[in-house]
Amino acid sequence: MTSLDKPTQDTEATAQRDARAVTEAALFEAFGGVRGMVETVLPGLLFVTIYTINKDLHLSAIAALGVSLLLVVVRLVMRDTVKHAFSGVFGVAFGVVFAMMTGNAKDFYLPGMLYTLGLGLAYIITTLCGVPLIGLILGPVFKENLSWRTRNPGRKKAYAKASWAWGLILLAKCAILFPLYWWADTAQLGWVLVALKIPPFLLAVYLTWVFLAKAPAPIDVFAEMEAEEKAAEAKKAAAEAGSGAASGHRREA
Image 1: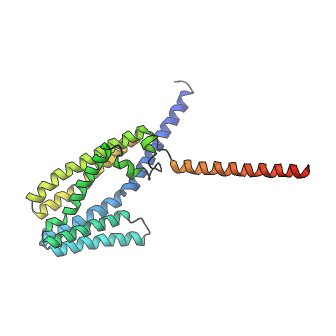
Image 2 (image 1 turned 120 degrees about the horizontal axis):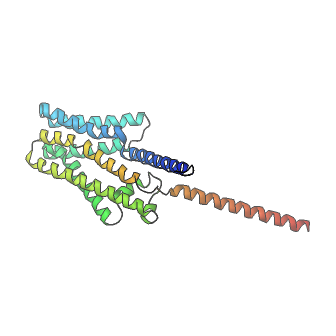
């Protein structure tokens, strides 16, 4: 190794570390991090715990909905983003409505299960159509929007792999839950569902990180737009300055 090779390798290693750090931060922001996982798990955990103890559908549903609303209030008080907490409230609210309408406590979980099935199919279908869903979700987070579709084929390939991973993991989860919906009781279904909340999610996020960490860096379209605007302003200023100088020469003549 020559003295010139080592700085180049160090620079490449630093760039790779920076790219991985950016990817980790973007995934953390997109999927809510530890707090988002807690907000996802807590309402269902509270529902199944109360129902396992006293088999009271109304009390279990009210408690789950109440803690979901409390999580939103906490985020509002802290002036934090509420998108993850709000999505949890809507999911719990739909589950409460379904369960109250049918009188079947297992229906509390049905909207979430149907959403998981639909999301799994969406990942697969969008990937087959050439527009992998994970790219649509993460593109704005990485400030690349849809530039990966036509200008960054390596990144599009990584998004396709990640979307396949998400789709297959979610469909595998549904393959476990839907039979239990028909054959197991509410408590059994609830505890299995709680147990399957985090591990499949973490596996999908990890695989996404692996694929994107090896992919080309995102194209920052916002930075490009800002650079183009500055270049246009500079060109306009230069033209105005040139016009002013020309006018001054004519007056002197």
